[in-house]
Image (tube, rainbow, N blue to C red; front, side, top):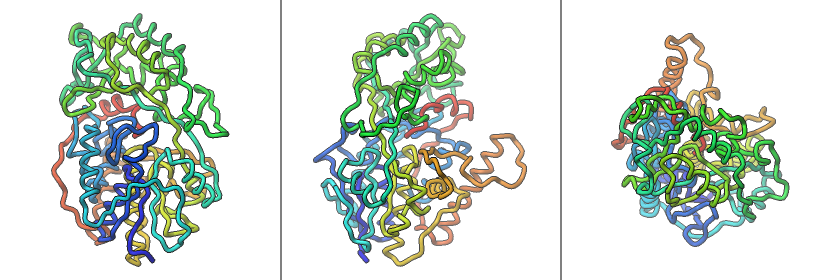
Length: 479
């Protein structure tokens, strides 16, 4: 068997997998087509690019995604190390300066003595059952490699559509109409808030639901596109285009990204009818993204409709929202919970193509795939992460052969085994108990020598209450 792991793709999952291999002392060749070639969804030259949003969602362990972050941090995740090293204020959420985040990871990967970066596009998986490979080429895997994976697996890919929010120049925001605050005034004033009266919201809503949508790119149009009533395309609920969400009802946005609760306008002392929040995109606060405004509108329509938002009348768009196809496997029929193929145990898959949905979920799959690829070379048995951890619960979900209608899934407590006892404190008390059990279980993996020891780097601590988390991240649970 090879004494080196080949990893295809230097996204979040691929970089995390590479890092876990070298932590086990196993050399890695990481194959990445950037910067020589890029997909239409990518803009930056570095590794681990955050395409859609710079938010990594909730930073608190009584939320499942916050707990997943904490598990990864405590067991030596490179991605979480980079996130805390490049954090920007985001209230209850953990958000990063996306370019500095990418640069941090790129430097670590390129300069590690056990990692060789090969700048090339992989178009086929070698027909070598002894080769240890991690495929982490992401949701926009090239047509050639997709076709080869379909040939190898004997199963069709599934498709859904994902959308990114626009980014505006901070200097172009009209602060005479907007103000800075976090929901419920928790933590630093991390958001710019644009208030709407009932009349302004009604006009905006009508413009939004009748605005022209962009034509799909060629790379976004598989021959047999599944259809859905919402906008005619299959879309992932956690990354719903704002115009599709709006068509579900006139009040839908008021309970989602335009929720005004906990955001009183300092000019009136009262909560507006609706509020659009803008989140800091970089450390210098020169760019802000429209929270929850993933969209598929044409660029002209984005300027027109989003320009109706008070404070954005003359906004300069640094990046328009885009929509692209995501591709994922029918993993329960193909993969084990160590993310290896049942029919070819030395071949691993990681990232969104496995059906884990989100930046951190993809990172987690890369962690497990990397650990187990290294263990293959070391001649050790697979390490199946306990379902009492979010890492293990996600791995169990994507490998559950009983699942017949497989769909992408974010981290959630519903995937984990129940506590088996009553817990005081309602939902918060239950979630705290889930978190304590999960972290104890994860740390035992290190204490028992199943994972390398960890020297935890310093990090910032995000503090917020659960209402703030739910309010700020209700429609951001995609990356």
